Each structure stands twice: as C-alpha cells, then as structure tokens.
Image (cartoon, rainbow, N blue to C red):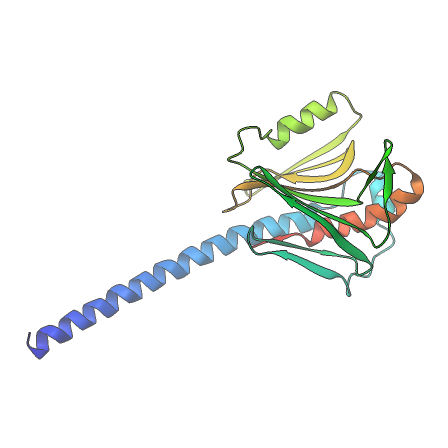
Length: 209
C-alpha cells in the first residue's frame, strides 16, 4: 500500500468517525431537549388548580438546604427537606418505590402506619400494569376526586386530589416506566398543612435525565 492510498483511507476513516460523532451528538441533544420539555412541564403545572391547594401554597418554603435523591439507574432525581429522610426503598420485577418522611415521624392511616410521601416507578413490561388514566377512572368511581389532565408537547401529567394527592406521568421520553409521586396521609388539617406544601415542592423538583 503506497503512501497516497494510505492517506486516502486514513482521511476516509476520520470523515466516517466525524459523521458518527455528529450523529451521536444530535441524538443526545434530541433526548435532552425532550426531557427538558417534560421537566419544564412538571415545574409549571405542579400546583393544583383549585382554591384549597392554592391557599396552602401562599407561604413559601425555603428549599435552599434540601437534600437531593438521585436514581442513576432509572434516570430521575428529586429534592426533599433536610429534616426528612429517605426511609424505605423497595424494588422487584414490576415496580420501584421510595418512601420519604420527617425524621422520626409516622402517620396513622386506616389503622396502620404510613410514610408521608411515596415515589413510585411502574415498569411498562409488567403485564399487570394499569394505565394511569384507567387507574384514576377506577378510583374516581369510588372516591370524590379532582383530576387535572395536563397535556403539552405530547407529554401528559395527571394531577389528582381526593383519594390521596399527587401526580402520575404515564409516558416519559426514553424512560420505559410510569412515574408517580403521592401522599395518602393528609387525613387531618394539621397533617395537611405540614405535608402538602412539602409534597408540592417535591413534585416541582422532579427531574428526568
């Protein structure tokens, strides 16, 4: 192989490598853009559009010293108060759940004890998975629920109150699961005043990557 032929092959290989890098960079940019849209939507709409919840948010919460929980395996993060703790984490072939509560605090619900806020991931390859829309329809048939269905840029978020409170995102770009964050312990005015503002700030803080 003469020097001229070798030079042509080398140039061709560098050109192919360059094109490959450009394609990869564009793909990464597209993924990040779609996730930015999802994250912006969560931040914008993580306030329930009814008077009761609006009143609970008049007092701002200082979140500057909040801790960050990050799950690199499933690509999401959120913040929680410094005086709270990540108390339980459970995973199997169908779902992942993470519980958060104030340090040393438990909540009585229907004769049992519950954590304040639960974050759940439901894997879509689970054949028993009930889609968010159908799940909330079933609940609304038995409980007095308020449901907000927000759709923007093909991303849907279901916010709900009544039977617990929280949101469910059925489709997240490039993530093969449904995501929810909720609380079922707000059964008294005192607990509601303490937990609801924290829940709303945690909902705002959710980010996918």
